[in-house]
Every structure is written in C-alpha cells, then in structure tokens.
Image (tube, one colour):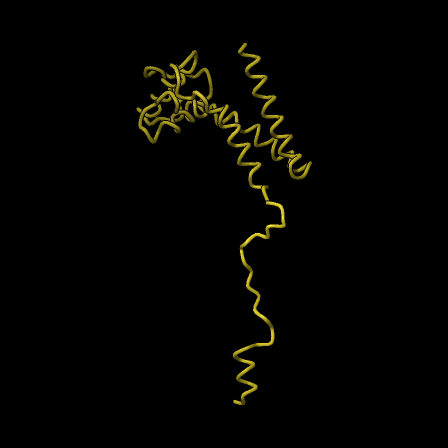
Length: 161
C-alpha cells in the first residue's frame, strides 16, 4: 500500500459528524412534554383527592360487598350478595372493584373507589385526543384543560358544594 492509500483509510475525506445532546442556549426550551404531564397532575389532584377518606357512602358499600364476594368465591360472572345471586345490574363495576382489590386480597376503601376515579379520567383523555386532532400545540391543551375544569365545576355544582 502506498502512503496515500493509507492516509485515505486512516483519515477519510468525509468528516465524521458527532451530534451532541447539548442544547443551544439561544433556542427556546421545548416544553411540549410538559402539557400532558401538567394536565395529568391537575386531573389527579381533583379526581384522586380524598379517595381514602371517610367511610363508603350509599351504594359504595353494596358494590364493595359484592366485589369482596367475587374475591372470596372466585366466581366473577354472577354477582352474589350473602351467597345469593344479585342480578339487578351487570357485573362490570363489581368486577372492576374486585380487580383493583385483587393485589391486596381484600376490598379497601380506596380500592372500592379507584375504578370510579379512573373512569372519570376517560372523558378527559377523549377530549384531549379530539382537541389535538383539531388544533395544534398549546391550543389543544388549553381546550382539554377547559373541558376538565368545566366537568369538575359541574360535578361540584350538582353535589351542592
């Protein structure tokens, strides 16, 4: 090999480009990831606040008893109350409570309320997805935040808080 051929092998003519992960301080920060994080935190602060406080109220006791029977008997198809079939409603909510309570082996206050709290988050996810399809960037997140505040305000108004 000649010296020129060795130089081409060792130092090729095309420069090697190394991209660094250091942000150029003249460019604005990319905070697109912050909108979903802030919206989840905002919703969680309202939907999961007080999930473990107080006793079960109204029909929460009934749902918790039937979910405990699901865990005890292993029959997740036919809801039973004190061993007798309880067929007034479909077993979906009872099964969801039993599923949330399954890792602990018993129904607790927060695990009986967890499926309802998670179900309240689904309209926000749907409205956020629709907003992002219609609008771009911050407008979509403002729309989702407005929908969340409107829903929470309506709930507190209906309860009379």
